[in-house]
Amino acid sequence: MEASGYYEVWARATDSEGVAQPHAIDWNPKRYLDNTMHRVAVRVS
Image (cartoon, rainbow, N blue to C red):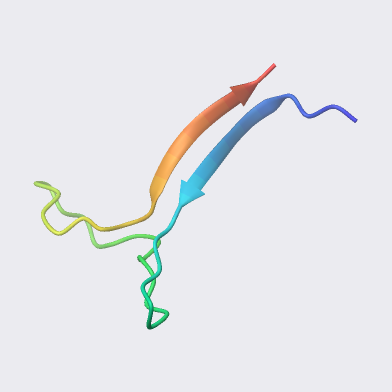
């Protein structure tokens, strides 16, 4: 099986009450209150 290619690893926090970070927020030019999920690009060759 070929596994090479472009991937993204997404990290999302969830608190003890089950409230999780949002996938996206409305556009925010200064990035205030940006608590969206963190994404890391990975290229596998």
